[in-house]
Length: 100
Image (tube, rainbow, N blue to C red):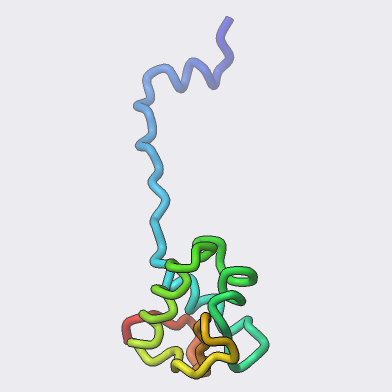
């Protein structure tokens, strides 16, 4: 014998499949940056400590360059010649977005 819940679900249409909204990697980096305790950050630090979607070197550099173009980061000379480093521009905004 079917339970009451099985009988109620018999005529109900199937729910639509849920799609996860893909958040832009630059936006995820921007959301994460206020938690970074230092004033500068390197590509290696983004890959190790940053959002999970930025584990690849090229992904981390591309996301940081988008933030440079929008004024959230400033390029600086890195201590090593084979890496990238940026100065974080701190702004008092509750929910920052990439495009201002």
